[in-house]
Length: 279
Ligand code: MG
Image 1 (tube, rainbow, N blue to C red):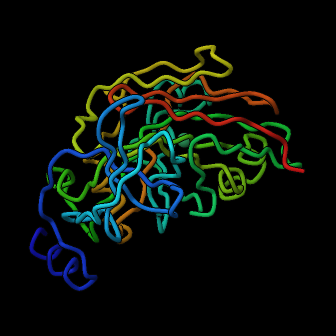
Image 2: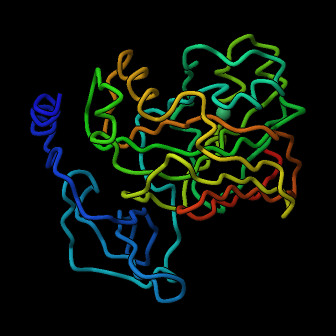
């Protein structure tokens, strides 16, 4: 598999399966334009170093950098697709009135639903109930297909935070989830990608207007990340930048215009978005 990944990677001009040092990768709007960056340092001292072209393989740097505070964080990756796992925590399956599935249940959000931190989630006029779903997001690092669970780590660029925003009434009414999950702005991602993070047992927490609504641990996933990558990549080719949302824990609920929703994952930070009604 590694050999075929390297062949595919060369084909597409990527540096391939080389392992890289731990990085915090972001995408920013700077005074000079949009760029992928490596974010170095913390707080007010953080610097965004511009990456040439893309962050896959072994990134090269242009030499330009900006204080992170002078930039705006965008969704950290451009995905060709977002693949989501439904009901991957038993307590969430239970609150939805269903059994925990034996195999992963997958669905797709269109890449046009992706937004970055601080961008408003827009509630469509066609829905009376738009919910948050805080989730750990996996970002794929190279073209791959038929990846075994034990080899999944090798095709993962890193991890970020996602919010699988859902028009719950449309999800229920349609019998499948494309409309309920697919509205523009329904896939906030960010604030950045951590390339070296052990995702096995991280606290995941969703707050609505500062009130904790979801609090769980990634160790409670029914299907772990290796199993998920194996299951999905047996169906479809995954491309660099593709995002897998790994399912939400219990505590889902609705958002209203004027609310602020934040998803925090241990070791990753916080993804915050305001909520508004689409005009
Ligand atoms: Mg979900």
